[in-house]
Amino acid sequence: MIEIRERIIIQDDWDTALRNANDKIWIGLKKHGSKTIYGELKMKENVIDETIENVEIEKKLHSNHQSIFSARLLKNRQINVSCNVKKQKIDGDDDKDGGRDDDDDGGSSDESRINLTFKAPDQIFQKVHSSWKTINCLDVTNGGLGVSCDSEGNVRIWLCEDGEVRRELKGHCGEVYTSKFFPSGLVVLTGGADTQLKIWSAEDGKCAATLKGHRQGVTDTAIVDRGRNVVSASRDGTVKLWDCSQSQCLHTFDWLDSGPINACYLMGSWSGLAIAPPALCISDKEVLTEGKILLVATERNKLSCLALHNKQHIFTYNTNSACNGCTRVSEYDVLVGCDDSTLHLVDVRRASSAVRILQESRSKVLAMLSHGAGCFISTSDGSCFYADECLKTGQEFTAPDSIFTMSGDGRYLYTGCRDGLIRRYKVGF
Image (cartoon, rainbow, N blue to C red; front, side, top):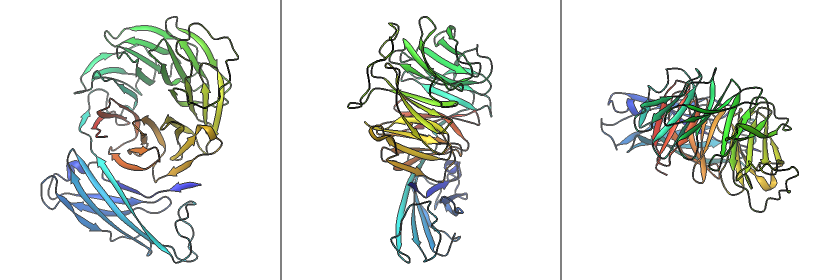
């Protein structure tokens, strides 16, 4: 059963607008399958850290809905918005919540409170990429470097502090889909529409190796431990394990029946998860692949789980739409985000069905980034939010356009958008 949740939305440039005493911003309450209820907020005075006036919603979706917004402007470009939602279900009304049974019987009522903190970007880097050239992937290191690639085929290394471009990596033909640092922070792995992977020096921008073997574009990559081996996923429906030193493909997972692969995520093994011994001879060029598990999100509505060293399929979880991202959120739980905006929490020990399926009034999921006991999730409507291991959301990061990629260094979250801008948010948790 899908859990349907209401969602608070806010004007994307609220931070700038509220600094002008005469400006108002709009806020809204969205519910799946219903019209959005809108309201306005205005500062009492042109100061920060002041409670904003409570605003009662005048427009009501139905006569049985009553909503009141309240908000408080916080430090560090944040605003906390809460909303009391009171709904009385009338006998004979159609069920509007897509299957969630909020009321036991006709005529009963309940009230819930939604509370969400919005964070505006602390910095916006406008000169790393050209305007309106979609940023497909970005990655940052703890050493203060970032790398990103765009729809125009550009790959650039830049400073996380101010976005100053330090290197341009030239060699791909066409769009570049993925760019990631090796753990050292001195080497970069990229892949693109030209079906190739390239390994670069971040110090001088030179290409050290090119890996060839895919028949269609490379959509995502993962680096095994320190980087002697890497994994690539492709639109051709295969996953490949590579030896970087020899630019050699060690193994191809080509039996997935997945269609194009949209994303992959590499992690350590689960204790208690039974994996059979390898059935194939393992190359001596594989380094530290033992126990590594690979999640693969596919266009054909499947999340597949593979044992990298053993070359075995562990499970496949089926969804109702294309899987665009996947990550691990707890010891046994993984999360997959889909084209229909649903989030599926799956226990790997019982992967035939989901522990929970959540759908808010958002667009399709585009990217996921593990962080603490949860993950950041971005969507095509410009929303980026944090969900914990129970799929509770309490923090959202505002942007005006689709967010295709995210990365973090423990202190800041970086997002790459369709408008060609990189936004930096200070993360306090």
